[in-house]
Image (cartoon, rainbow, N blue to C red; front, top):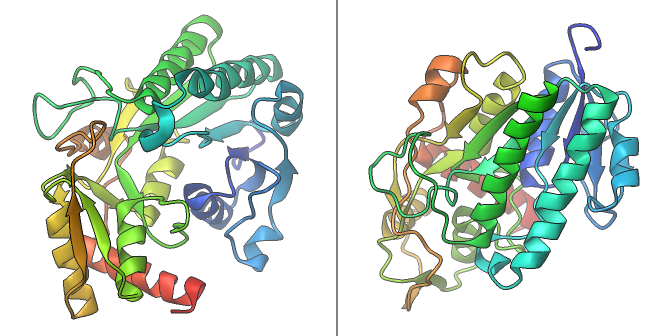
Length: 315
């Protein structure tokens, strides 16, 4: 690697998680390069963006991806071309644009002698309907959406490249990240969408009776886990990253009302087949081997997200 501060490539560095990660990496003294789709703009401040080496291209184009890998030591793979709610509509596209494109990226990374790939997997979808709570990394993986299947397939190929070629990897199975910079127009997470609608006094739509339970983790805590994953991780390469606790949608709305100091409008609709009823991650392995644990409570996280939304959307 390039000295004590390896050069880092963030695939998908213009998105919600990527922009926050870039800020964290720069603050930690790393040189940062981003590979992003031409139509995606960084959410970083101008002062931060000016420190980033920015590459634009198509993740499914191996030539463009290979050029972005040149001279880098560690890759954060945050790109996903689908969402859980739409991935089942075209599974073949999901495979081609995510799994196949990732395999080609790994082939380039191996040829170029990169040190490590850190992959943002999905703790919310790879396990499917849980048989125990909280869900440990050893839990069976039975995803019920194509999005989760492709995430799991990429995990397996990462392990294959590590076994065959020595390309080190770390897989972070993220719960439901939320926080500053989360886009509301892309329906990128319940927290941002709910808060945005509540601020505008719009009705919040709930699919089902509101009992669907998720593990919400604030973005700054996710970034700390990702940066920790750059270091050796002992005998493990797969880690859950969440809060370790669950909130139902109804409980989340109650927390939002607490932060806002008023009630919010809501309407209930029939549940969706791809929604796992409950998902809460066991984070003990990350605490032990990444020396990481979440620091931001849901109320503090909601307040910070609320402040960010007011600023970004001028509400």
